[in-house]
Image (cartoon, rainbow, N blue to C red; front, side, top):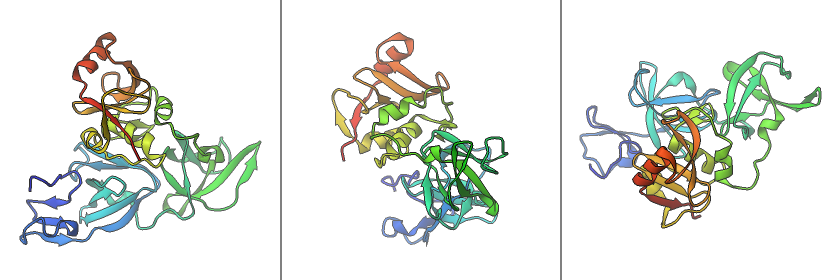
Length: 287
């Protein structure tokens, strides 16, 4: 049992329930269930440590993100995981849908909105964020020189998004993308520019370039190649913390010290000296 990680392996000792992927690793006192595919709806979905809104948020699923539902509960909660990283938590089933976005559009803007009509004066329908996917729902229109894309919305209601929110990102440079998050608020378990934590930032800026990282800092450290000295876009690891290196000394990170994304220089200033003293090492993405 010690080899199983409850963050990514779905088993409940108390209820003696587990996912079928653990057949052969757990004894037959468990009832095994097959997770079912699902997707996040039009809003970000908070995954909690327990089926209780007052429990900590452990991660966040972005709009249109693929999920696996382990158990749907009668109280309106589900035990589920984000498929890309296998991370488990409890979420309200109202935010879960049965189908993937049709004709998906990938959001590349850090933040954005769906509008009720193709006009910046129109009421807002919902929020968007980098990494989200929405369903295209028709042809583009132009209004005052602005290009708008119609998208499907929640509850069957459509909406409109400026096409600039879907423009391709430049060539892969996770460090440069992380710098665009400067001053974004720190939120434990968050994974979007509306609020995110240290490992959420690292996972997001690598993930949009197809470089998938696990969810938590210790998992990311184990997944990367250990290097002795840092270069741009390497990750720096500390106890329970991770940052993205801009060069051999400077680092951008989401942190609870400033409650925001900021840049520190290892070994300089009070915070930088503390980080240098706690540095566990560097890791490098290698395809």
